[in-house]
Image 1: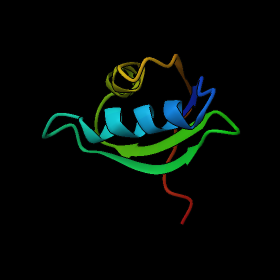
Image 2: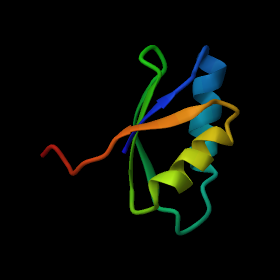
Image 3: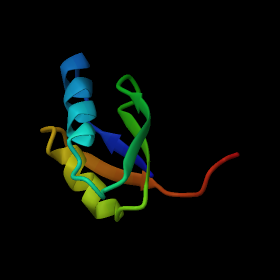
Image 4: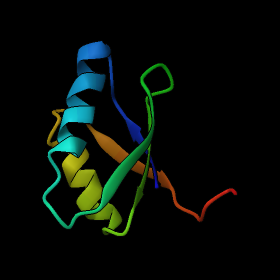
Length: 73
């Protein structure tokens, strides 16, 4: 899943990473890419997109789903 996340500084990016790291056991959220300059976060998960968006917004940053798809490998 790819999300547009309003990250204005490195502190925002750190907060997003911490919010995903704090995901409850069983949420199965793996951070693939964190790109603060592009305000983009890419995750791999079996959780619902809405649940991941909520986790991202727990960082204090607004998040919007940009897209979803399978592996590019």
